[in-house]
Length: 222
Ligand SMILES: *[C@@H]1O[C@H](CO)[C@@H](O)[C@H](O)[C@H]1NC(C)=O
Ligand SMILES: *[C@@H]1O[C@H](CO)[C@@H](O)[C@H](O)[C@H]1NC(C)=O
Ligand SMILES: *[C@@H]1O[C@H](CO)[C@@H](O)[C@H](O)[C@H]1NC(C)=O
Image (cartoon, rainbow, N blue to C red; front, top):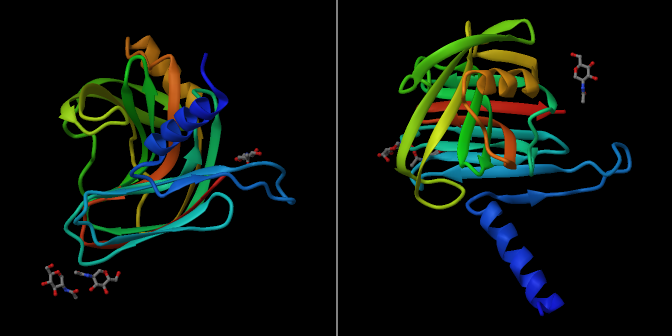
């Protein structure tokens, strides 16, 4: 029989796997918003000169300068869903390569997905294969799929598919930005193209990622 103590340790170690290399899960009940918490995620490749600051509620700020490494971070939920309607707003001012997107994972099968709202000079889905397009929240999104071979994942180094929806045209970077993302619109479009996400969700965030030399992104989600 599994003792309560070993069960607790198993849960705790799973939680630390989810959290690493993230900054950690933030679950804070607030009197004004009810028991709503946000998951906070931060990753760099070890060389990125970037700073993640977790703000109140669904807010965060990432700043980077003289940067040559890669980073991604943001706030969201753990686990994610395929039906959430996400609002985001803030200031997105990247200099060079960067993207602002919903970013998440499913398991069984392991899928990494991005719904990209804005990006710098380089479209981060460029390595993908075009599968079609869909209209969501009043805009057109290109749909792409890519295969990642022996790459880092939430299950260690694995080979897995990436699904992409990329707003076309992108929201203009360099200043104020806001939007609404109805996830079911994207997940349904992917499914209709044979792009099947997994049976369970891992984390799901509104992420700022980048590899460009400098920038700042201050985003609040709801
Ligand atoms: C930028 O990075 C380079 C290489 O790491 C370093 O030599 C240089 O001093 C840095 N510049 C600033 C302003 O920090
Ligand atoms: C890293 O960024 C900070 C400010 O964000 C800057 O002062 C510092 O020079 C940078 N470090 C390197 C090694 O470039
Ligand atoms: C998201 O924004 C829409 C309007 O664009 C609003 O109706 C909805 O209540 C907002 N949802 C949240 C969770 O703030």
